[in-house]
Amino acid sequence: MDASVDVKQFGEGMSRDPFGLEQKDPEFCGLFYDFAFGEVVQQSSLDGKTRFLAILAALMGCQGTEAFSGLVPDALANGVTPVELKELVYQGTAYLGLGRTLPFLEASNRALEEQGVTLPLPGQGTTTPDNRIESGNQAQVDIFGEQMRGFQNSGPQESLHINRWLAGNCFGDYYTRGGLDYRQRELITFCFLAAQGGCEPQLISHAAANLRIGNHREFLIDVVSQCLPYVGYPRSLNALRCIDEAAK
Image (spheres, rainbow, N blue to C red):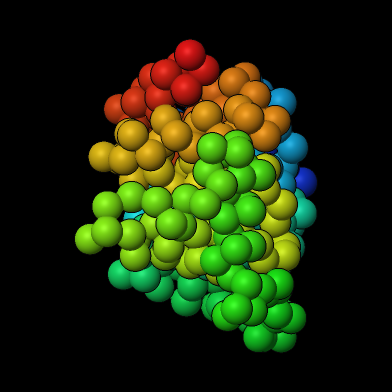
């Protein structure tokens, strides 16, 4: 790795070689670290916590388990709390499925225990079985607008249960939890979808939701820029196009 690289530009406490590549792949380290930890970060106005929330969510979306594990200690050092880390992973289940999120839950648990954090963490749930659908629909209204009122009771009869699940499970079980606010939750959802690929209709919808609740266009472009080294150019360019579609 080039000794001139100031990896602290990525945030206070950033590891010199978080992926353990320096010894066997020093030339690659010079290329990637100079770019990701130097040039890319210098382009950004995001604070360290927001940058790491976005990158960790993107790594979940593209199934970058080892890279995720390598960056968790630095995310914690840059202000991401154990609760925020767990909430990020929990919410990923609604957009990626347990088959894709389970390795990240295990990686988070290992990292937290290595940091001396006692598990389980305090519960963050705010709903009950009786009000989760109503509360989830209110979250949909708060984020997407009044046109979502009663969404759980809309749609064809044969797929009505999916809309009820979206309200009660995706939003009622996850978005209503503590630990992250709506802007942070929509940020990580945007990153899940952008990095996963093949979800452009949903990505446009959630880009619009981000814009509606205050994550403005320049912010989202900054987020995509910070995630680009981890998800590549094709999905990053698709995400930029979806932001533009949402902004229309």
